[in-house]
Length: 350
Image (cartoon, one colour):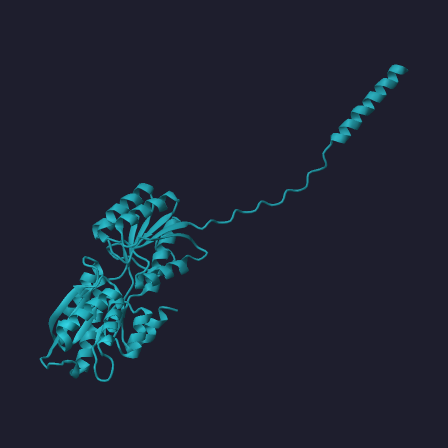
């Protein structure tokens, strides 16, 4: 009997312990949350942040990237060696594509080699690489303009305004005695604008005489300094100031104002390129005859769209309005701007 009771007690203890260790039924698992989609990193360099026009291109890129991409943005400070180092740094940070505004267009092969070694697509913008460089890499493209187009449009503004204002021919010789502020030597836009503006004026049947042609390096201060010197040398013999960009044109206007122009009957026609807001104000005021809209908003927007598509492994043109030409380039068109169509340029900055 004792043995029987001991067995019963032992069995009861085992059952009790088993009950204490039992786990309650598992609750249904909550559905797993989908991981948030990561925005790709895009590495961007601008040849220099304080360039008037490029500041608007940069703004368009930043606006387009909102909630779509993380930008690794760099000021190359007009130094190609600095830009090369920035490209290395961006690659090390894991960017998925590169958007490069070259300091020196001749450096494109170096950038392409870096991109190719990392397997990264690269979108060059605003400063066009040589066609052979773009063709050397299947993941390299360009966003910009047709450089000659701006010179042709600027030349048309010069020719039309000259024909409409016979009193601008101060010496009555039928020729335009002009001075020309050139951008950076070797820059495709500077070379093309300098050539085609004068070619277009001549094609309109107007004779010209070049009094001065020097580089103002796209800079307002340098533009002013050159026009100061030219006014001291040539005085009222100058009949037209032509500038490769608006920054230099604004410098010219500043110099002319300091020398008594745009007051009373003393006038000097000035024309630029870019249609930046400050220049549009001068066109509106009549102190600049015109400019050419270099569409910063669409250049920046197209650059970001291509870089974002490429970063996501898509065709660079997918879902965009853009097309590539035979040089693997997206061409954003220019528009000649005078008082008559200022609204077109103003709309580009909204």
